[in-house]
Length: 343
Image (cartoon, rainbow, N blue to C red; front, side, top):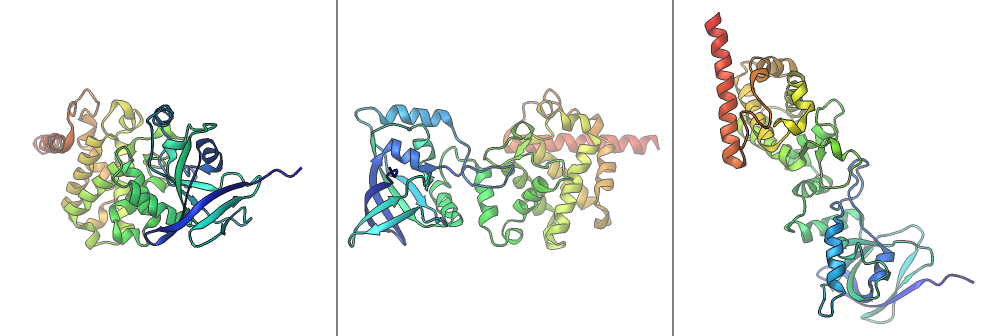
């Protein structure tokens, strides 16, 4: 006997400029037919935030209460080569969504990941709206519009969306271009160690967020105006050389990331400000390579206490960055004064 497919009666209409289906189905069925395209940071696939199980369990508890309700869940019927789903129009506003047996999960969860995540087998009926045939890129754009101001949505994940959606990232957001370069370049000390807001098997190796490093680079570019004098590839290499020098001069502090500030927000921002100092001071900007930065850092950085119990302890926020930078600059000034005095 042939396994029956799924048929859901819907209304057909417009959500602004996009054609959509609007209908009702049990939570269990919608859970069975849908999937969340969570960003896999290692593979570079997907675009949604990592799943928060507690958030979803809280909604499961709520939706079973006698007074509960929710706004429509939002899906997309992605195009498929096997024609596993079809929309059969029965009139101007009436249609039937037909899904072949064994088609699997055909509905991409555009905006309902945490509401639906733990609702398997529930018979409670829920409303839904479904886009028809959007590409993954179009789907990501809509997700970005819906969720860009959502509380708890990782700003680094939104930055990653910008990477995927921008047609000229180097021109539109050079600081983000460089941050992604640091993350993806195998020779970088930041290689695969920036949190993008998705899921990753290398999660324990993460040191900072993509948003943190790109904001620090933004300040570096603003102070030096380096992007006006050099191509973005050269700027990327200079930033890479600086961080490579940090890891070279301070290997123990870099390796013990939880006990030191090098990879934490305060340290990242302050060090990129120091990088701007060093670049500005260079008489010949073409010597701003790993050796130049390592020599400059080697004069003082090994004597500075970068630990969480050291000179930067208790600092936070924008004011904390200014204080941290002032202390680092003072340590460098004293080290240079000692060299001159001893000479």
